[in-house]
Length: 588
Image 1 (tube, one colour):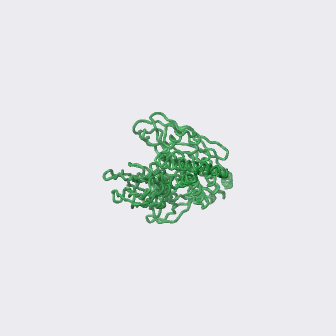
Image 2 (cartoon, one colour; image 1 turned 120 degrees about the vertical axis):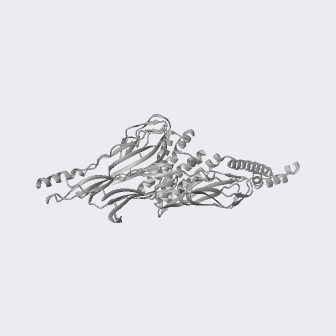
Image 3 (cartoon, rainbow, N blue to C red; image 1 turned 60 degrees about the horizontal axis):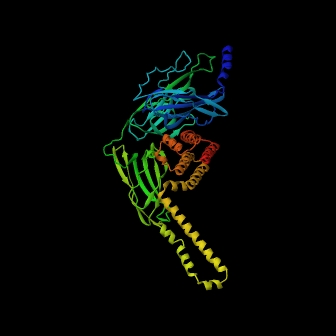
């Protein structure tokens, strides 16, 4: 008896140690077709590691980065009264190969708590067409301790990934839930692997920060159910899309074998859900309007201007607002009809999306600066947009009402006439006397003539320069955007500071990429909304921006994408992210 107890007491502390950090990179397949995606997963595993920074990706000249996401799981154990927690943080990147052949994904790096970690390079073979599917491998046996009396777990402990529908159109969202169902005695529980959502745009709804079980009755049986994740998934392409399995590790408490085995024994098991296959149908080509901008759902459109009068070519802000239920974030900007005598600049976008009762709803705004080039009343025609309603299986065309505004003092002639030059010329003409009268006057009168003459020249020169400036504002979009870049930057920074003070993490995260991308777009006259990340990198290199700065910008944008879907940051970490934004702006 004492031998048994002594052995237990000796072995127990061996479980309570602080494991070192494990940094690893893997891909879902090492042979792909030229038009197929490779999923690169960079994993950080360790005990009580807190928040780790995004890894530094290697140069990927042979790949385009199509998207990024992240996942985090925590395995909490209570052993001998001591609580330990092992975290697994995964950074997931979708890579698209650019050419056929043997390509290399270099080493990823991580700097954390004064140490530098590095992964091994990965070789990927890219073939023409589609690659052969990998051979099916028999499932590996879970790591279990042998036991005499086995515990039935098939129906009593489940890893469940469920969706509300399996047949959708491209862009039509479905709701996914990841949960654990339990009816057994469990010593500890941990998430070994969350499902992958390749091929979907993810709109997070809920991510659990701790194990929170609620009693539910399912098909006549009572279960303790813990919801781990809930999200809206928007399929990006047609075909058969797969949602991967969720794997859960558990230690089950076994019944004691005899009186002295009063602690009982535990049995380690791994359970996993079945993968789900989603049938994604393409949007019909028949009846597809030219005004279709990618909206799938039900929407309305409205337009307004921030004021109805403009003086001296002062910009009018046209706001086009799209509201409704569906893939709001993925809707592209509508086409604004030509407005005679008005220059239309590239818009800024702002979206407000939320999920209520499993419905993704909200609005997206496009702010178009309009610069009048001629005087008079200007008519903004109806703005049209088409969307696809998946329930009705047809397209709808919606439009805004017409708007009007009045512009004055836009021409160079009128500016000159209102500058006082004509009156000054009359004054100079009036004070011209004959020579005799001039000689008899005080010498100070001559100085007054000179002063008036110089003043008139200055006013004329100023007017000419101002008119040239106004004309260039109307005709040179790059000049106009660069001129207003700093003022718009200050405005965006103030908005971000406001979100930071209110601890509004969602809006704060969304504002940071807009600060960097908005400033870059204005400084270099780039239509950021129309560029992929790969195209953006090429444009920045073409503008002679240093490679180190471009890398910092892309790393920062990836980090912003990741933290949007990660657990909440501490206040100090938010401030550090904001400081990083300012540091990048200083380099630009």
